[in-house]
Image (cartoon, rainbow, N blue to C red; front, side, top):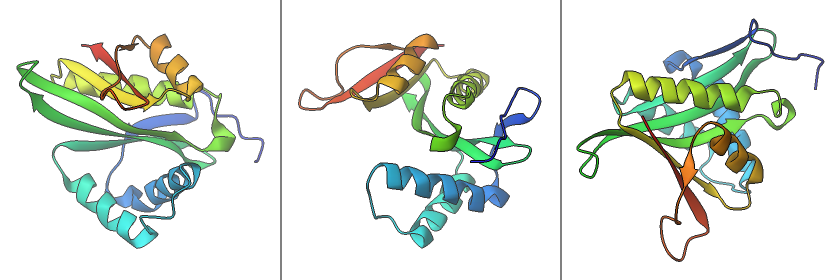
Length: 164
């Protein structure tokens, strides 16, 4: 790791576009490694990223450092919910490069995702995380998300939600 320390002046959080595929691929491949998975392979990830970036119901948000490129991302999806009688956002993926964690990048990404959900007229934003991911649970709670029961009774995932 170099000595680069992102701050509010050098860290940009923005919506990703098709020209960001290579940077996103690097981050998604890093997430794949953290999850201990070998699949999907890079070429399949690229095809999926291109399809999702072109979709009206999915957005990717990137944390970009002036000197270090792509540092983290969020994938967020939107759908109409019968239970909310309106649009809801699902924060599907949050990943920050391991050597860039504890610098506030994840916080800034989630704050950006919440802002975009509000701008899109969402009534709620949801996510799930593993119960052993204490750092993520702390982050989500600190940002106003609350958890109830697991999504499924046999699951060890925790569902978090924030009314908007």
